[in-house]
Image (tube, rainbow, N blue to C red; front, side, top):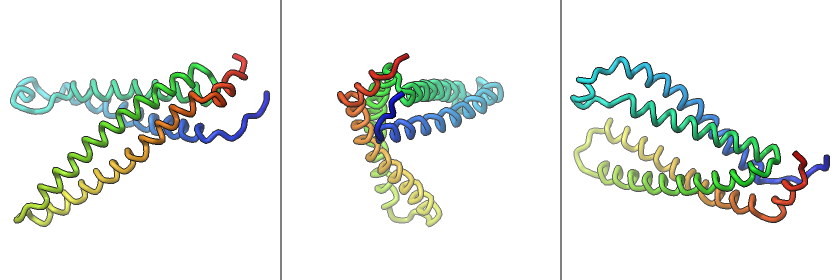
Length: 172
């Protein structure tokens, strides 16, 4: 087997896989917690305005399944499988669109929270909590702003001729 040159795109694929694994674990745990809450919340409480844990459980299960699919695609790409490379391009583009959309939502929330916190007469404790939340939104926004071009680059490089040829050399 011939050795391949250093490929920086593999580092990005590893990061995508590791973040998907973290999301998988968190949302699998959340699904278990919410499944236990389904029996604890009565229909009357849901009708009175309490949140329905079934909706959260469905979201957590869907997220966990999507994260598992990203893990499988990432592993296929890291194992030099051509199907993994092609699928990873699609995953990178989907994650790019999702990151851009959620960054816009986070920016809007950050801006709105700034307007609320700018009002006179707010208690100091509320201001401190609001500023902390606003900082968290800003950090998330910065990470998403970095991830968008990185994911675009990953989708592009996985389609480049040099990378495609490296995948073509590996026999099944």
